Length: 147
Image 1 (cartoon, rainbow, N blue to C red):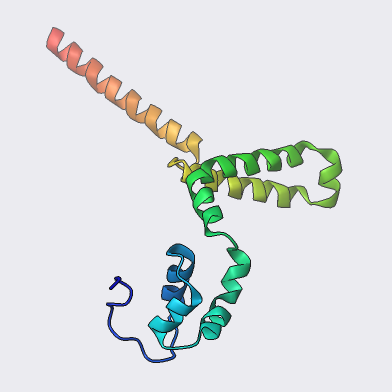
Image 2 (image 1 turned 135 degrees about the vertical axis):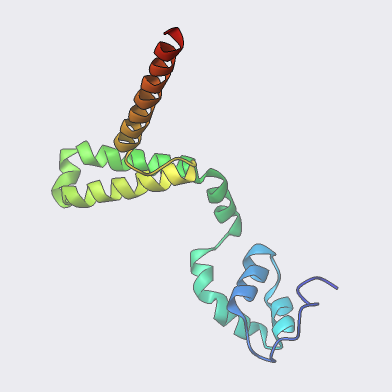
C-alpha cells in the first residue's frame, strides 16, 4: 500500500486540491487513482485540477525550469537589456516599465544564483570602512609594540 493511501481517511467526496495536485502532477497518478483516494469520481478530480492543467501541460517542463532557472533568468535579463537600448521597442513601452522589468528579472536571477540583491555600492563601502578601521588598529598596535 503506498504512502498516499495510508494517510488518515479523507471525507468522502472532498478533494484536497494540494494533495490532488501533488498526486497528479508530481507523482503522475491517474485521475481514477486520485478519485479512489478521495472517494469521488475521476471527472470531479479532472474538473478540480483542470485550471492547473492549462499551466502545467508537462510537469517535466517545470522540473527542467527549476534545474535551469538561473540560466533562463539570465537569458530573460539579457533580452530585457536589449529592449532597454533598442529605440524601436522603447516607443511601445515606457522606459520605466522596461527598467522595472529588468530590475525584477535581475534580482530574481541573483537570488536564484544565491547572490545578494542589495545595493552593492553600500556593501562595498561598508567593507572598505571596516577594513580601514582594522588597518588603523593594526598600525596602532605595531607602533605601540615598537615603542
